[in-house]
Length: 128
Length: 128
Length: 128
Length: 128
Image 1 (tube, rainbow over the protein chains, first blue to last red):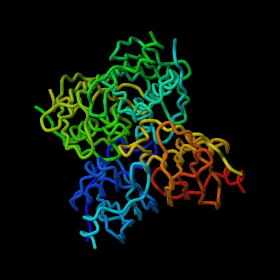
Image 2 (image 1 turned 90 degrees about the vertical axis):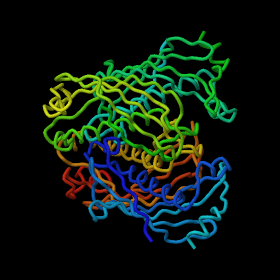
Image 3 (image 1 turned 180 degrees about the vertical axis):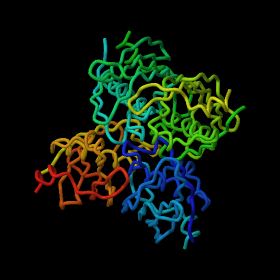
Image 4 (image 1 turned 90 degrees about the horizontal axis):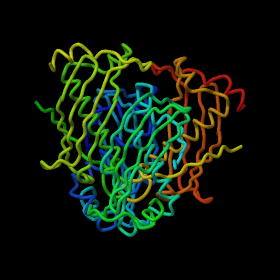
């Protein structure tokens, strides 16, 4: 089941090539992941107060077409796999149905000291 | 006495108008303030572990000319005034001696809960 | 008459003090200005193809309270004055009715070479 | 042969987890690529005036450890392969000799309309 999240492109997202700066797609897809996490019932503020944060471990990203100022994009997120410690998601950024960016993102949970820790139980129950 | 800090303009700093995105000058001048703070003997990592951070209270900024990709800029920082609770600085961004951006920045210290607190003693001793 | 624009705070907007990084409020209020400009019937992509862009000339900004991750903010924008060459706006960022950030922004239009030029006619007709 | 480029971590680079925000490593390594490109004798401002820009096509990134505020990092860049149309580089971000981030970046050249075009001759001569 897909999670769909809208993103509008603003001036801040562009660079002097006239297109979305490549690093900013990572921001777009993280907004979508944050929204997805919240939908699962997780509060990242409360998690952080408990000393637990999500950390990105690996990203494979393909840039397929350029997005531009004022484009109305959609981030489509799917959980690929989840174990007790590792969450793998596929995320696509689409414009009018065409995929302009695609990434596979591996995230884990860690303490604020950087020690890996298990994913929140609620997440594992929801997804599996 | 002025503190001078070099900044090079990269792709990430530009926008689709082909110039430095206006919000990024605030990043440039904060890098310079951080460097100045460190020169005064303050460790912002240690401060934060002690629950104290610098917080910007007010900025008056004038954009005088556009900086572009690969420009070699200099941030020139001067302390305008410092009381026990408030630090006011003038910061200019210059390119080849010409001022392209100028700001007056008022900063205070606060706890992580947002309560105002006195500026570090070492800073007040150094500057006054 | 006020223009109201919603902004959600994401991880990208925060810094290690646990709050929204001060420069990012300038991004939030520019998203609102862009939305307002579009509502007036102006297409900034077309403007740029014609060699005209909006440029910020001056910002006076007051930081009144800290916004945090996942805060639901509103940017409230009002035109303060508009002449043939200069647009002055007041913009407030509010959370649950409380103003956390307030700015007065002066913008002009310029060619891609940085030469000042008149504001688009449509804007002047709409607002005045 | 490696290209080494220093990066200092500032407040703007961190997020509320107290570490460098994951998307910002992409900025760090692009600064290094830009510096490398300049060292090869290429002027990206002139290229863009001629309608040619570098575009990232693919990134594989591994996040190995967290960088923090005020860390003195080094980006170590190596050309992995270069054909007439495609440049593949390995880039590592190191702190005190330890690799905290590693990426393989595939870049191409494109016109401002997004059409792929050959890499600049001077680059191909230098590297091969």
